[in-house]
Image (cartoon, rainbow, N blue to C red; front, side, top):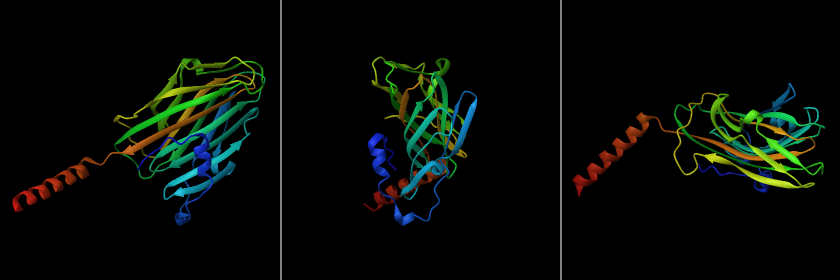
Length: 244
């Protein structure tokens, strides 16, 4: 299955149509959590917006919440329990001081994966939303802004020591946070239950940040299955040789 990096308007356009032929299938419990200042708010993304089925195993979630006081969070994500997560989210710090945020998106997978390859990518924008003339986004204590997770455990990280700023009123800057496993084979994790993406960063007062991201885990055929396919192919080849 081809996994594409859906961002921005492309993702929003996906919400315009649903996959009716499999409308009886249950949507996965795609969940979010947001933490700041010692407080954490979490829930199912479908409880704070809409969810549409776009393919037999693909769902599009779109929503927003202000459940964490002083913060506005919105998202648009395409997910597949097969599995991948790709989409965008935006957060606005509506308080008068800089805040540290840890934001998680998590997806249950099915079936479990014993061997895999993986890939991921992240990019974003920072906006001076209050017109103060400056905006700042940094990683927390020099750590990583993006972390891919499997069963809530670290898999791969990007944007270590990030430091992005805007220096004009209502200005916006874009940044690329890098990628992994793009155009190459990168060994992935064993996954029993979930994959996810965690974002951790500090955002200046009154300002907004948006992130586009993807995390894909591709199951690798079990050695026995692969070996059987190879042997079957060799037997067929031998028979063709003998009959020629």
